[in-house]
Image (cartoon, rainbow, N blue to C red; front, side):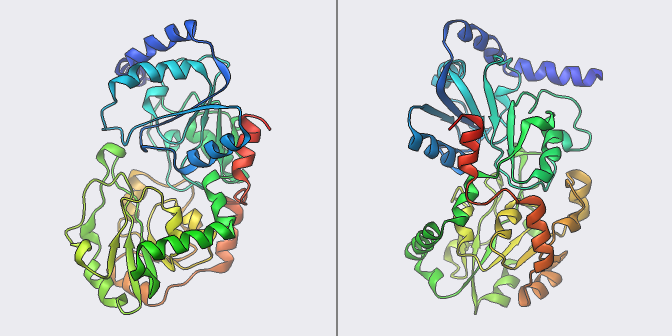
Length: 377
């Protein structure tokens, strides 16, 4: 192992030295309980996403002691009480779920009987993560998962590489939060909810603009708004559409436009989950966001707005060549985006192949499979 990788590991442990020392001590005196389940996240403030679905299924079955320890972001200071209760419940819980990068957990040597399960928040295999990224080197990050989920059998190998674990630890069970897409009653309720909350959405088609972030990660995330002309989009579509803005929650900067006082735009970035918005979306503009996988289940037109595609490939890259993902139109500049907006399309043959490859285990039963497989019937 290169010297610089040893230094990475040393620094990771030093940043978390309290937990590295405290956890083994707590493990000596706190009994691990088979029915205790802990959910941990540094990118959400409550049970949502995959966590919410798994927790609700556990509650429905009964007999489990469930806790969640959350904070809004990596930059958010950890409350003092968490320094005690996090280590205590980590020692006490047989099952520990994470759904994203969670730096505190990686330097700790967990008890062998403990299950650390990655309910990765993103569906499919799009932009590279973890050890799948070029020149990532060796660190402790992601290495100690005992199990992880993916949305398709064919991408198990990709996440085994990304998480630095053997492929037998990666389970193609589907993504729990996608179960709602197969629930007609839920679809009806959520549409009624949006139209009641925002009556203006009833009268026109809905364009959803949902780009992902640029930058190294949560702490440095941004989007280059100089590459998109919101006035031009409005000029082309305002007679027929309303545009919902849903930026990735990591994006720190904002465009120089007053969405609040513009009737064409509705900024719903503060909504934590994007899934519910897909039920009312008629056309999606995105880029390298994994929302392309969820949206594929609706068989609707999609535009990839990727003015920085080559730059993104050079800095982040994808699990597969970009043309494996583009079942909609691709726009590299504003002129191409305007043309696509005037005539949005979806390649149904390519869409079918896309879903077969990346989404085969998303069928409305993922949550039950996750709980059955990892915790028991």
